Amino acid sequence: MSAAIIAKLHDRFDAQAAQGMDAVFQFHFSDAGDHHLVVRNGTLDIREGEHDEPSVSLSMHSATLKKVMSGELNGMSAFMSGKLRATGNVMLATQLTRLFPGD
Image 1 (cartoon, one colour):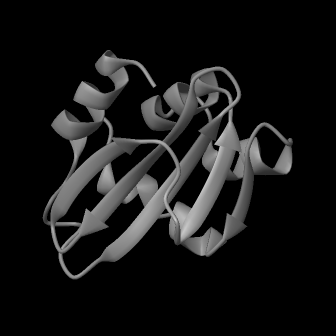
Image 2 (cartoon, one colour; image 1 turned 180 degrees about the vertical axis):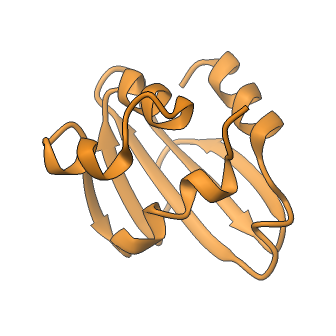
C-alpha cells in the first residue's frame, strides 16, 4: 500500500464512526503486499503485514480499493464481480465506507 493511500486513509478516518468498535481489517493486495487496519474505540492504526486474528480479510488489487474508497465502484459490486474476495466477518467490510467517508 503506498504511503499516499495510507495518508489518505488517516485523513478520511471518522473517529466518531469508530467509537466502540474493535476490529481488524486485513488487506491482501495482489500488487502491494499485506496490510491491516486496527480500529479500536475511535482510533486507527495501519500496519504492514498479516495480523494473527483479523476480524475480516479482504483480497483485491490496490486499484480496486482506491475505486471503492472514492465511490467510483460499489463495494458490493466489486465483491459480486469477483474483484474483491472477503472471508471472516464479511458484514464488517460494509462499515469501511462509514469509517472512511468520501470527500
